[in-house]
Length: 254
Image (cartoon, rainbow, N blue to C red; front, top):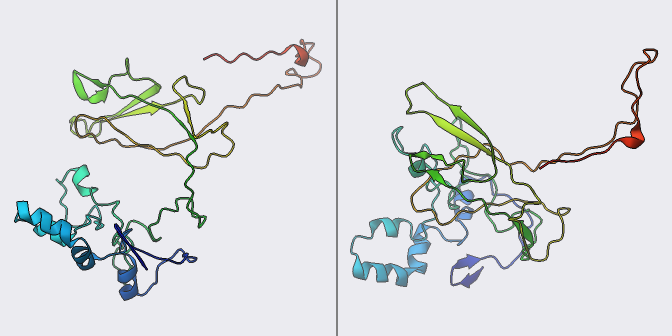
């Protein structure tokens, strides 16, 4: 292991991308990106903890998890009245998110693979940034903060409403966004030329003035492919005019 300002990192390449099935060994391995468990974090970041204690003596929550990276399942200790943001607040944390399934107990875990910066799992840390960027602004309806203002928000092609039980409390509105690849808002980053080698899509948000919960049904990269039909569209013997394949023109409307 090598010691850095952020924690401990292995000096050798990890060939096997898996945890040990032994629960005691799994607890030592599933410690997050800093390579430290809670007790080791308190010792490693001791100067940080002491600086906080100098201004705020109540640091019990800080000392429990100094790195704030402990995993918590969305049903673990929560009630049905807890908001969605509260129940999923620690779901993406890496420490302890790969718990072992013991007996018939439901395994409350987020993944069964070790967390790493190798997103495409090719055992290589790619540092080149080359991508197309599309900006999608959100404008909420002033008269109804739970809905999007479709007149000002671009790329919305459909709106579906789920009334739930009819009381209005469980009402959900779904929007379909369809962003053209040749949009005028497209920005090329890192010298990318075309779409031939794109493997991943990522999304980030900024400049929200209030907490917002967004639910996404699916992400899809779709295309339309057109080609001429050169055979006749009429049945033989009916005397109908035949299709002229050479005179067929295509015009795609925006």
